[in-house]
Image 1 (cartoon, one colour):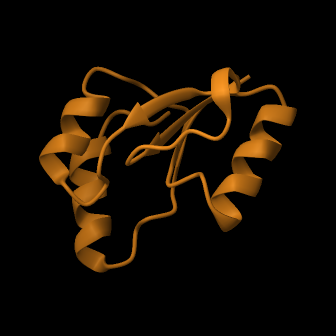
Image 2: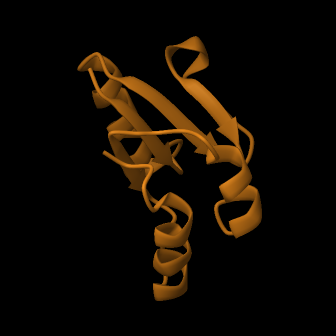
Amino acid sequence: MKKILVIGGTRFLGRKLVERLIQEGHHVTVMTRGSNPFGDKVEHMTADRLKKEELSQKVEGRHFDLVYDNICYSSNDAYSFCEVFNGMIG
């Protein structure tokens, strides 16, 4: 079992990914701006991926084996992701 964070896991590919990870028995955390269609099957974090400081506060002190970022749309998004998650992913 791996600890996996899925950022933007409630629509389209993200939703299917989360469903598959749950089926495989992983501990899944979903980060969204609000909704959690998976109920108690996942841990839920509320944050806006595009607000770097908010994202950093939500994941501070955490460690994940994998992180899927479905909201990374630009090189600036990728850069801020690297800054926030440096040292937190196994």
